[in-house]
Length: 253
Image (spheres, rainbow, N blue to C red):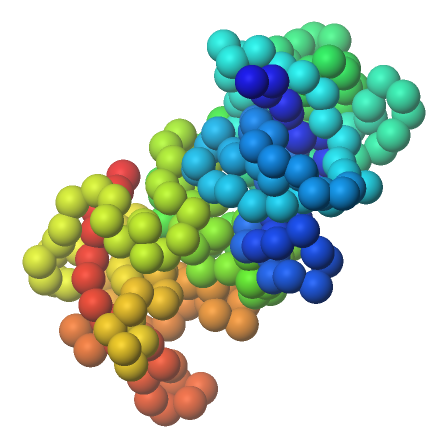
C-alpha cells in the first residue's frame, strides 16, 4: 500500500465524504497516511501518527509519496518556508519536516524540497521547556472542533500536540487518551504534565486538560485557558462555578 505525506499546512479529516460532515481531526504537514477507500473526489485515509481514519477532499490535497522508513522531525514553532515550485507556506508547531540541512536552509517533505530563511536552525526543532511550559505557549489559541494546530485546536488536540512536541504520541480523542499511560489515584499526587479527564452527565469522557501546577489546569475550552482544578473538577472564576467534573488522572509523559 502506497504511503503519502501531507504537504499542505493541514488537511481537514472529516467523518464522511462531504464538506457538510464534521471535521474529526486534521492531518498536519509532514504527517504520513495511507489511502483505504475513495468516493468521487474524496479519499478515505488512515494516519500513521495517531492511527486515525477519516475522509479528505482531493481538492485540499497536496501530497507525494514517501518511504515507510522515513522519519519526520517535529517543528517546535512556526516556520515560513517556500516549496520548490515557489509556493509559500507558514508551518505551525507540530508539523514535521524531513532531512533538514541547516547550512543550506533546506528540508524535504515527500518528493519536494523546501527552503527557509535565516531563522532555520536546530532551534526550530528543539525546546528547553518542560511539557507544561510548552502548553503555556498556546494560551488563547481558539477552540475549533477537530483542530490540532495552535491557530485552532480542541481539547484533545491540545494535549496531543503538546505531547507530540515532547516526542511521544497519544491517541486523538479524549476517551482514548484516558486509557493511555498510568492512572494517578489522587489529584494531590498529580504533577505538571499529567492529563486530567472529565465526564459528562452520562459518565462518558468528554474533556481533557493538563495539570499546569498544583491547583491549576490548562485546557482548551472556548480557547486555551488556565483555570482552578480541585477534586470536584474545573472551577471557573468567570462563572463562579464548576464547568467540568473530574473523572480520572493519567500520567503519560
